[in-house]
Length: 354
Image (spheres, rainbow, N blue to C red):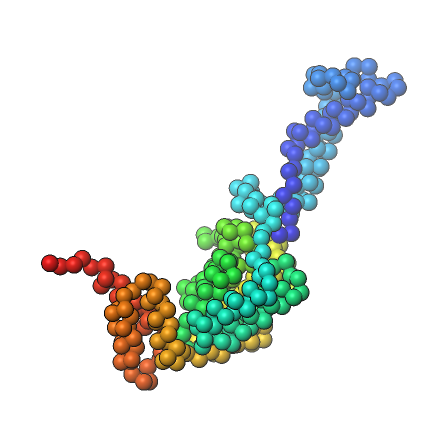
């Protein structure tokens, strides 16, 4: 954050120091004020009451000017005390999630691939980024912006959450279909009814992590919102300065009206198609085209998920039989597995009837 959390003294405190300084000057100067208190005298307040009004006005103006200059130097002078308090957690900066060794990068990539092998293009891109961060000695993990394009239900968001869990970073998911204007991501100015800093900064303030993965789900379905003044607000357009490293390094938050370094964020956007996405966004985030899981891969995924939820073998077998009975032309979806597991858990939770 391009701001300083320096403690700015109150105007009255600065005035008190200026009066003390003036008392010392006049007490030491030859032919000066014989009534001026000495350095150790505690009667400065009584002495200053006897000063001419012109001296008092000059000191007050000087104290106000010094206070305002110190406030302006912090970069937070325009914010209320309550708003500054929200930012106080960033006083000492944020932590960056790191990948300690290239071996750990290999382990994470292997775990992702073992769980979802059909997501190999995305996993490989992240794998290379993790190893590069280690080799170049980066202070934290820096992922390139990803645009995952593939059929619905193949697990794009599941993969993103799994990545966040494996690297140990809090993951925020924004549903583009319900947040069309981009306010949920970048925030909106104070004065709007829905004013706020946006989900990205909310994640940073909540976890004090400077490079959390931010998932924008189904970005191609985000619409455009027109304000009463005729201004168009577009989610994809709002993302452009955030996915470009040079502009993200000094991104200005519309809510706090302060600059933040957002260049460490890992942006993961998902879409079913590139239709409707702007050329500037596609140039910054080349699409990674993904295919759905094969039937054997879906079987393996179902077995792992069933074991994760401690389902008995009979329930696992029933889920696999359900997958087998799917028509050949049906899109193989992870949602089918998740629905089957939820149903099996619900059945197992029912009381036994005697």
